[in-house]
Image (cartoon, rainbow, N blue to C red; front, side, top):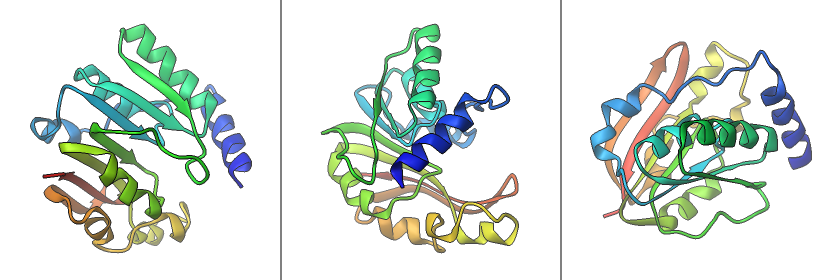
Length: 186
């Protein structure tokens, strides 16, 4: 399965028609809650839109993804902008995440429930976990992603427990049903 996933994402990111948008706007609204020094780990980075935003803030970022093509694009943009982003090709279902501690762990548009205890463990004291993941309500308008990759209502809150929630929103944004959280290790 992982090999199929890698090939599918490599094809997507290799397509010249594919363009990666910038980091989600809501990150700017909560930027004061996100550290701007230390190490950051961006999970399922794709072409690095969140990793690059974190690096622009001054963090030393490790961007993890299964797609070498996506990671190549991330590295190229980081180099072009003079940013500190280390890329790491990992099959998250088979390989361990880098050791912490991290001031920030981010995970956008990717759901692997068994990683949440690892995210919490990798956070430094006062470190933050920032996530944006689609919810099952999304299936009301879109056939993809499949249900197993979608959160139940308020599930992100329980996945992040016992972290202290500083920001949480769940609902429709730009025609996508999403859950967003920033939670801190106290």
